[in-house]
Length: 428
Ligand code: NAD
Image 1 (tube, rainbow, N blue to C red):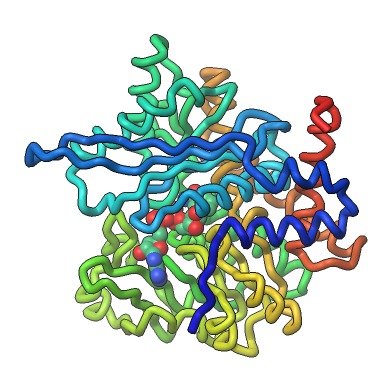
Image 2: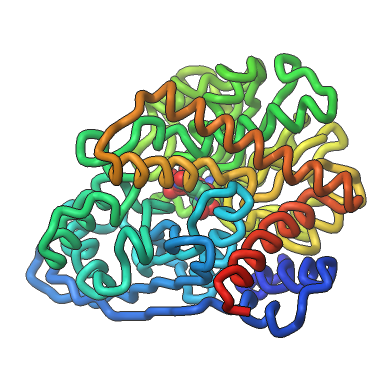
């Protein structure tokens, strides 16, 4: 039996552990263990068939000592207040570790967007903003897309906010479509950011990227660009990706012996990250069960789907060959599994460092919105590479100096920066 995971308890456990390592004042720790503000609200939506459906919405603002709260909005059928709390806390650490001047927030709605028509999605997005608009804004809290939400949805949300506030405010949401205030490079940002940190880890471990294989869980935004980056930027090979099939209600791993072609798989993937099995089989791909990705004989594992996927059970299936786990998803490794990775000497690139590329380009997007001047994709990706490389090296330096595991080192860098901002502002 897998353990039941409450993501927020897991986030607090990780924080408590580092608060101890940092000898943090218990009262200061108490401020950081909990979100500063939380919102839960009901969103009535008129459906296309004339019925009224009521959805549960959330927004959590964890800590804004370093700047406005920042974080995605997830549309997911299993969303809970605690998941949103955990993710908001991780956003605080992620912005701090990436050294961007923002705090941590997260939002969500309990819904499976695959069951909604386009116009129902639009009404739901506008409903979320009608509940939250007084408590978000470019200087308060700047949401973005995440699991189940898209640039188009951010466009509707930005429009609703602009209508309600009475002025065009592109900087209130990031991840907007190109031409609608969005930034070049945002689509690739998280997946490529994962790859920049893997490249730095390989330098440190003296591995040859061109001789390396990766196995990836997921095939949504993060996983697709991680797969493309691993093959095109590093010259390595990807053994498999995986996805959730909402019709079969099962996960599948899609693999190929001589390595997958991520651009081809992308061309047969729908907007929810589901791959067309028939077309994949016809092109020589093997369809295995959902857990197969984790047992592949590869050098790098990239969990890029959901939280809690590397747990007490699944960690036992990891091959001897694996040297790096690059956490593309948020919270993919449970504390029990983390101990196993540590004991085996696997180099872990923790989630809030590894997947900080998305929020970094979101930050670049709001900077460009403020300037009303836009950079080219190459400029954005070069700035992203700089930020991710410095963040990785700051964490590696802390890990070597304090002789701690990378996850602890990342927390130490991040929490140290947030505490310093709270002190400078006279909060603690
Ligand atoms: P997405 O919705 O685009 O894709 C999710 C993918 O995971 C899909 O391919 C889906 O089929 C697959 N999936 C879902 N359940 C699965 C299962 N049980 N087994 C295998 N595959 C499964 O989401 P995304 O934007 O790629 O986000 C993935 C993860 O990365 C999440 O944890 C998210 O919070 C995190 N993240 C995303 C961003 C971003 O910029 N998109 C930034 C930072 C972190």
